[in-house]
Length: 541
Image 1 (cartoon, rainbow, N blue to C red):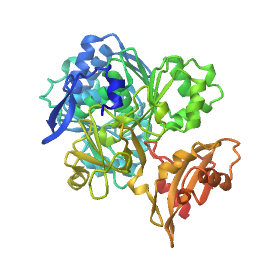
Image 2: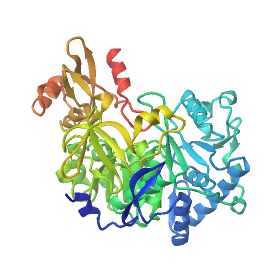
Image 3: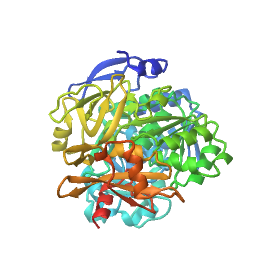
Image 4: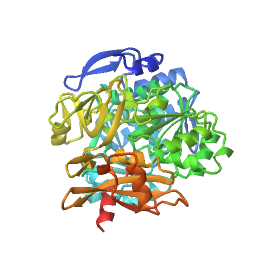
């Protein structure tokens, strides 16, 4: 059967036809036949084609030519301070132009950028710096107190601060030594590491996923191809650049076609986001569903001219239907498209084909053109279409493994596939549905309850802003279903209201038996994921 994506994406020929190639010691995968081999090759093409087009907007505006000069200067500075091919450079920064310029500078000299989210604390930062054996740390001056003592990060030779002075750190401008002194580019392979991104650590110690030039280029082409991006597009980066979505799904996906990246440096606030989006004539975004909900609920939304905003991608879970309906009324030109991915897939595994979303609101789209998803049961055997199981993912966007984690690599990367740990299904037409993380599945007296399924239904209840379902221990059944609910302002909700709504829409064993209403938003980690471990601790406490 021809996949629907072939029909809806066939006109988007960015990347050229697909062909079978082998990478990473023999993994077979579908690759774009017309692609730049490396990130520097991608940037060189942009510089040749579109030197005067806007590249980045933040506290200054940079064309691709101006960005190139800064990248060359930073590359020269990094080399002067001892960085060469394969060395790791930690970026403990917010959404600044220096972030993207330094990532590009690292790839220019064969070094590896290691972004770390600014909400990480000193002990977490210490672990990641030592784990990747970083030689340089570039950090926000205001976060100097989180930088571990020199004795505890022995591989680090230099610290650089941005945004003010910091004890023990040189100013970032010390790296700007002049573009003409940049060293010659080293020999490069598209299988070389370009970026190491640490997983969020919700299941234990963070692991550094190795993003290669191959994976970043394919993911960038995938997003640009699936969403029809061109040099006229202007994206807004309101999620951290230290997250795979901000860096690859938004920034590199926009830059690979010569578009403009608009960075939102400050912490998210709806009025600031809308003002920036209107002022910069934003066309493209990838955001968590909660941000779209906040925009839909904002009373002064209509005062902002957002007529250019045409693609609103969101990740992971389906968008609550009330949010979709409200945004459709208030922003009728905005096309909402779901996607699904992970750090280990360099962002995309699925995208919703344009023209299919209304009939598939409960889906995260179809497998991207260069990807492959197989659903397997607990024994590793493939299951029939529509049957839940663990998603095994393959393709050039999948990372080759984790940095210095041989045991995890052996367990999670099997026969050319990455075992996602996510429970989902793929139907006969290729639409993927996500039910739960394997560890979040609730076993109630032998019945499997997927918390995401209950959450997705409950978000349709008027008055529910967000919710999270967990299993709580039970001496008889093993676990019972419990839900945390953050109501919308002035919403009149009761436990009976919640249970009644769910009881009309799902099997009785899935209905939450207990309900906790929260006055504050659900706890989330630095990447925006709900921290169910915190909720479990709240329940126990």
